Picture 1 (cartoon, helix red, strand yellow):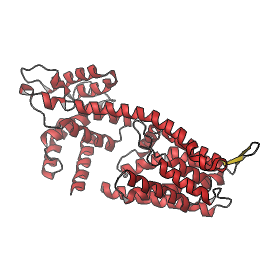
Picture 2 (picture 1 turned 90 degrees about the horizontal axis):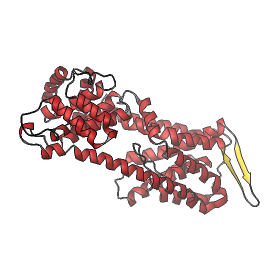
Picture 3 (picture 1 turned 180 degrees about the vertical axis):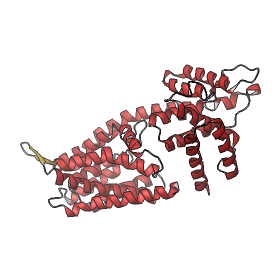
Picture 4 (picture 1 turned 120 degrees about the vertical axis):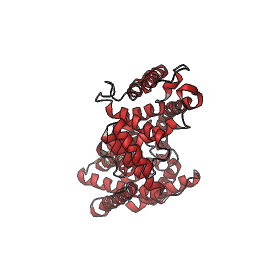
Length: 408
């Protein structure tokens, strides 16, 4: 089954599952909508206002803060139709304001997710029919505990897990590990959004129109703090990407020339192969960084006689260590890829990463158009002989064949 077909089938199955879960709202007795019609207008406006304030954590996918408003509506017992309408309106207005394309899969995914949240809230009430109540001199508030817990789990655990299955389309061999890593990558954002959803559900009957600023304050605080971390992390990766272009711009003469964007292409291909093999997120990051920087050793060698691949790799490792202590493992991968029979390349914790970099470099160097069948067959024979890791070669071949299908 091709990757595109598997991805489409995965999306369809997830939408069907979301519809089924949301349908439980009508089947479970005791669900009472606690939102007045006029309050629904405020929820709609709140969702629209927060749609463009996505929170991003380094290494994780952006989480729309409108999910807090949608989750609060689900906790308060709003029907799937109403919650789906709120989600669809927020998504549509957000896209129009941002002048972003209106894709069908995007709005279907948002509506299906909101629809499913109401079902999770209903199932939470069924599993834990406990209502927390508090009162003061003139006001009182209540919160369905089961619904709040279920919606929080759906936001913190379910959302990143579903995004992994949609993104991978069933291609990666260890989706559960990927789901766990995605949950960890949003471990700060998810709980913040879930807690704000519970807060909104709790204070809405009391504050009414003032519920929106009450929810916005903690969300904006979380967004400002995490956005700084995200920007710093992105700048770090962009620096590594820029460094990958230094050898092709500065190296001439005996050390040979490097084609434009060689490091970038090798890095992108290495990421796909690492995902195909099911490497952990951190191992994948290290592989991609090593792929970007694997030619950096050419800058350390003086002009003269051409250097061997081992000498270039060793010089590259030294150069990377001078950049940052955070890149020690990356330096080890770069050093080892120059000698695949050396002790470093045979270490269990480096063996596969080293061969991914070596194989992707070979592909880009010796096959100008690797998705062309004749070139692919020829370079695969070369990789089996020189790289020797059949798992890596097979994964690389599958990635290139999917790219050929996507192009044609």
